[in-house]
Length: 470
Image (cartoon, rainbow, N blue to C red):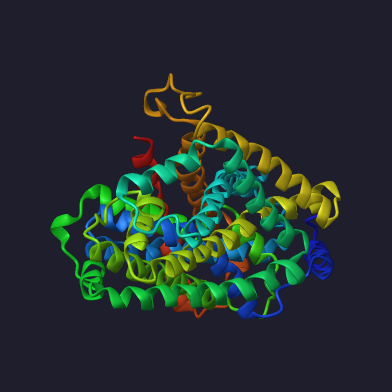
C-alpha cells in the first residue's frame, strides 16, 4: 500500500469500503455482549473457581482483581484499538498499520501469533465443550442421583475413555460454533450473543440462588472475599496474573477481530472497562454458585480441574433438586463455552475471507473443519493415545499428551507472547497520534494508559512468560 501524502486518504477510503462490506456491530451494547461472550467462558465457570480454591481464596481474588486492572484492561484496549485502526483481520490490521506508518513489516506476526493461538485453543476447547454437552444428558437423566464419589468418578472416566462418544460431542460443539460464525457479524455473532449472554446470566443467577439455600453461602463469601495472605504464595500471584490474562481472551487476536467491527463513535476505553468488569463479575458469581455447594457437601475447594466434572456432580447428586439445578449448571457451561468458541473461530475466518477471497460460509467450513480434525488428536489423546507423549524427550514436556501439549503451548507460550508483543507494539512502536485519535481519552487518562501499557504491562507479562517456561 502506498504511504505517500495521499496514503491517508487511500487508507481511509479502503477502510470505509471494507467496513461497509464486512459489517459493523449495530451498537456499543452489541459489542459489549460479543466481547463479554468471548471473555466469559470455561475460564470463568470452570477454571476460576478451582484455581481460587487451590490458591487460598480471598487473597488470590484480590491479586487477580489488581492484575485485571494493571494487565487485562490496558492490553484489551490496545487490541481493540489495533483492530479498529486496521479495520481488517488481526494479521491484515497490523499489516495495514505498519505500511501506513512505515513500520517494520515483521510486526504483522503479532496478529498471526494471536490467530494461531485461538485456532489451537479451539481445537481442544471444543472437546471440553463436548464434555459439558454430554453432562447435560447425564445429569438430566438422574444418573448422578445418590451416587458415591467412586461412581461419579467412574462416569467421568467412562466418558474420557470412549473415543466415539467424545468425537460425537466434539463434532456437535464445533457444528454449533460454525453455524453462528457462518452467518456473519449481525445475523450470526450479534444475534447469537444477544440470546446466549442474557440466558447465561439468568442461569448463573438461578444457580447462585440455589447455592444460597445450602446454608453455606456465608462461608463461601468469606472464602472468596476475606483475604488471608498467609495462604498466598509467589506461585499463586503468578497464577492470578496468568489467569487475568487468559480469562479476558487476550493474546488470541479475538479482541482485534471484534474491534475491527467497532464503529468509530464508540469509546474503546469505556467498552473495555465494561467488558472486564462484567467478566470479573461472572467469575465471582461462579465462585458464589460453586463454593456453597462444595462446602455444604464437605468437599475440597481446591479439587483442581476435576471440580466441575467430578466434585460438583457428586454434590448435585446428593442435594435436593440437584438433578434440576445440576442440569441448569451444565447448560450454563455450554453457553459460556459456545460464546467463547465463536470468538476463537472468528479471526481465522475473517482472515480467509480477506486473504483467499472465500465467502463467509466456505471460509467457516474450511477453518472449522481443520480445527475439528485437529481436535480429533485431543480426543484420542484422552484414551487410545493416552500413552503417546510426542515431545516426551524434552524434560519439561515429559509425559504430556497431545491434549496437554496444546494446552501448555497456547497458555504458557503463545498467549503471553502475543500479549507481550501487543503491549510492545502499542507502547513503543505505534504512532502516538494514531492511538490518541482512536482512544479519544483526556490527556491525563491517555498518559496513564500509555505509561501502563508501555512499562508496567510488558514487565508483568514477561514475568509470567518466563515463569511458565521455567
